[in-house]
Length: 368
Image 1 (tube, rainbow, N blue to C red):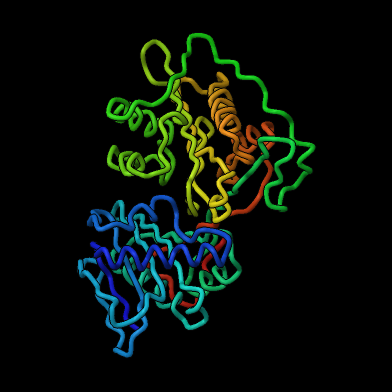
Image 2 (cartoon, rainbow, N blue to C red):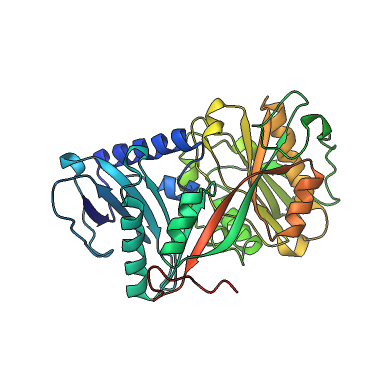
């Protein structure tokens, strides 16, 4: 096996890794990478992150540091595992990893995790690793490498019609789900849709304000937004902006994917609500997403978040979608209450594991 770091992918690399991700999603029923990590599977060089792969080979394992910048060629073997490492600053790193279903139980996940922890230790950085769908094997692996369970991100769903079951894991009968309430826009607020090429800067500013305390969403840049605008699923008709006195005060960005998507960590403080995608069932074309909802902090408590959520849900229903889903941290009780009041129930969860620098492999972190 070979273990290699790289900041840039070749077109062949991109195809191999996307195939790996799709195969794992089909096998597991949940995407192994976040929305943001999946968007980085391109030939564009990373500026705040690294790609890490394990390929099957008869060669001796070669370890390169995360600053190596190597472009690898996996023509001598098969891609058996992959990790995306985001390094937005010197102290807080985040990773996601996936092992090909046919290559599991061979220590590949451990090899990836060992390389990630070694790099984080060398940099003195906290390392967070997401486990999408909360698989038991991930919990065992994380525990063995000194990680402790830090965040629980719930996926919640609700039918958009009385005839739309959503997977069998819901906590109440589909017939108990209330009809979508009517929309009442607060006085002095108007709602329109996003205009590409015009609204990017204003949206990034309010997103940063609404998610100032959020570890992922609050870091978004115009480049991050434009990456998503370039995706085939992007539809400005489902991207709603609320304005008051000529300034942006809230938004709801909905998403309808055309193929298998991936989940990702994100939720918000009590004044803003976020969700970020998802799992393999979306390939059926009947699942719409509350991708991200945010409210400018000075407008908190006026019901604008609920109004914007309803506007997006009505839009998804009117498109003929059967089910809506979203993500929310289990500790964000205001958001959970809002969504439960709108008929959402818990469906699945993702787990973020945290490891502090220098924790010995095989030790059990203090979970107090």
